[in-house]
Length: 106
Image 1: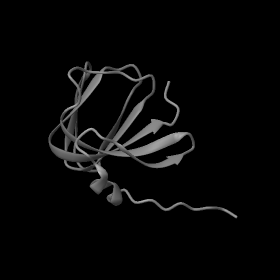
Image 2: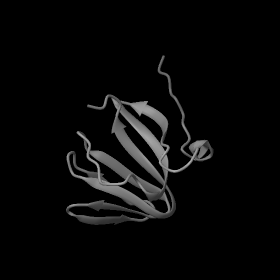
Image 3: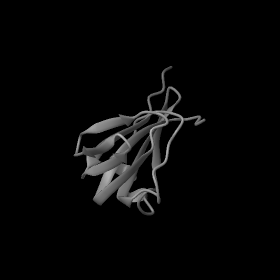
Image 4: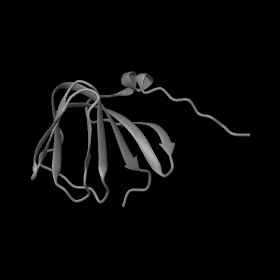
């Protein structure tokens, strides 16, 4: 018997303790779908990952600063930041962002 697990991104909105506190929504094929509230600047300086990082804006607008330039994203727009590229997300006003990360991070 196949098990189907329904999930709701909308339900995660009430779980945030503050900005930059991602919540796992569902795991699938070695990946974790997460939602986070972005507000202000993430961290003091750009950071990198050993995996590609996926962002999709669900509400609001964000910018991601990289050494290759700034990426501006509005609602329903997304980007994949390649592994190893220094980047720093920023949201002037609160934004809701969906992210996709590997379950096992290097």
